[in-house]
Length: 329
Image (tube, rainbow, N blue to C red; front, side, top):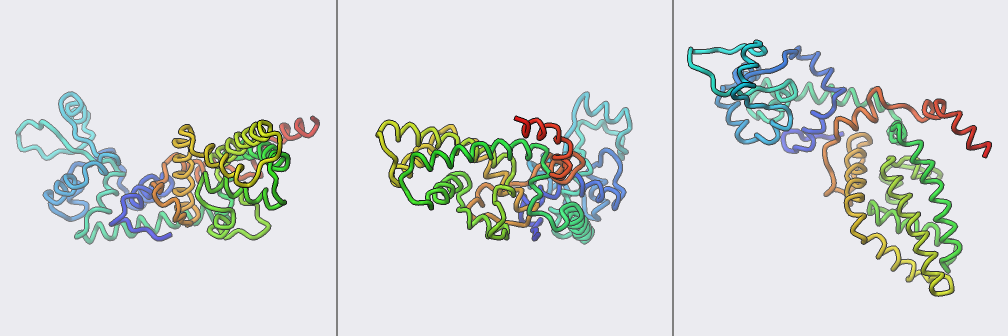
């Protein structure tokens, strides 16, 4: 994965949200205190205090998002009295104090352009981050979506709605057998702007690979909702007309259904997750979803790479009794 952490805030945040990599980085640099003053940050990166203060002024929002704090009043007194930080005091009363967390200190390395020490730190951070991802993902990124604990349940739900949808297309659309692939593509285009073959090409899937087996649980929920709703719309319109629907009539239903206001926040969320996760976990760039690209959250790193993630095989083993009951029914 190519990252330009000097130019891209998304790339910087992707690294800073990777809790697994940050644990390894912390060991590497032995930065194990709770807070760091601006002076300590300046000394660590071998730059002037003025350089640190200017960097804060130019990037305050990003640094604050990653743990930069300015303390005053009671909160400041508590920090000083508990000696969480070492201060060089010239005898004057300290009225405010800017402190950085470990995460903030790393953020500085990605913003300081002239510091050789910062250059070395960010190079090491990139190496560690890439190594952690390679170790966790291995060569099976195609199905990394299945490590989500929610995947199995949502995949089952989607499969049920898929059967309902294909039956509705069979019963209510007057087209040849290509109508199943056609309206599946229309659903995909409405949700993540790509046809099945476009998606498969991006993920390097074979002809026999089932695209939905690689999709994130949130995307499967949206697909299930779309197909369930369209099934009902096809049935209602066919009943109203007293005949099967033409292709153009089916197209119009899809168009109106997908433009309903209720879908916008759901689609925005699904597109953001898909574009962001694929870019980070699979090194796959969805050009048609580029406007939805974001930094992957710490929660997502834990979900797919952390201890809470589980392989599909383990999930099936844990839910074997559920499958047995379903089979009996």
